[in-house]
Length: 253
Length: 269
Image (cartoon, rainbow over all chains, first blue to last red; front, top):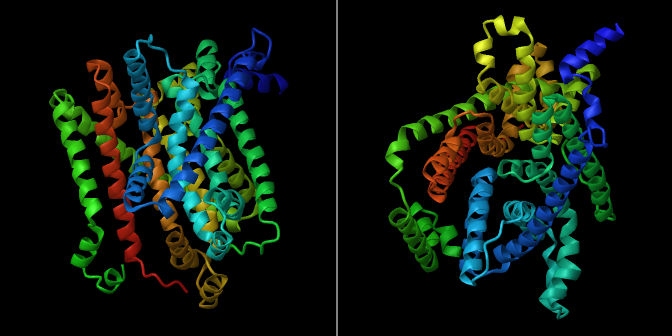
């Protein structure tokens, strides 16, 4: 029975493949962990950039002039209607082209764009479109009297944003932003297509070299899943904290 | 603004929307489109038109087939989580969590490279009638996109099934409907209606997931654009056209779902 099970496992995962996950050199565990660290870094950067764009976008959409509002509408619609993969390719090529053209214009040698930095910028732009909508809704959900009261106290717009709008919208924004964070962690996998060394790309390379695809893909899947589950746990705690003192949500479900 | 609201004939609405700055913006947008048409290279287009049409067809086929199959799987997944016995509900929840917690690209590659390298080891699989299909890429693409849609929609349907008011189901039971009839006539239609706006958004996301199949050699519209890029060294034009194609399909999807929603009476019991 035991040897049968072992046979099945060996045929399923290739021969003695769990050793391939070891951290020491014959194993490739270190590569996978570095890929995972890169993925988390890209996700954090893209999400952060997205939130910054989102705050600006939401302010522009709510308080900007008619032209700015229309332009932001075009931005959010285009970025959300065209697949992220297409944006990654377009902005990746166009962005590195542009940087190098600027560099040659200033008589500097052309450089290779750092894949991770480019990935953060591209994913951040896509995330920005979604978080603009999330934050716009959250700002609209604040009792508007609070903002009017702050204005009446003579708060400057910066102070108003920092002291009133951001903290007051947080309870309404957290569910949407949490969703965006979970999307960001998984969208980093798309960067494998332009060859960025994140977890999915590293996994594919390791699988291709050893032919133990199942082992590596399942290990990587477990890492992504762990990240998702830990994030969900932390975000649920965070949501409870920012909603403290507010009436309980009375969702239908 | 007030007269626009009061005077909501079609003409008045169009005129209200068409403010002076919008006219200027539209003119600028048209100028950009014309500049793209005249100054960028489109001479590759006739040569690849047939391939592109095939690619668009494949993309739409993939979207429709995987969404339909995925929804068919999502209904039991949602029902088991909302009202099923524990031995069905817990596996369904685990399935949804795993699918939603890992990237689709990883799932796709796991199936294609993993199963694809596993199957040839077994002679009986190689000799079976399925083998010609299993050597192709598209079954893996359909399988993984279907599973992914089922995972996300299973969660949506769970909420939708749980959200149908209890009174509706109790009334159906009081009328003496059998469980199957109650499900078919009352529970499922109302749950689907509740889920429809979410399903519309999820189907757009499913469209955006289809280009991933290009990474396992399936020829959809995205991979046609990549091929043009590799063969002609023209980078931006195919990608711009690709963006327009996805934009149009998204527009059609959104319009179609809006029509579908409008056909169902608004008031729920």
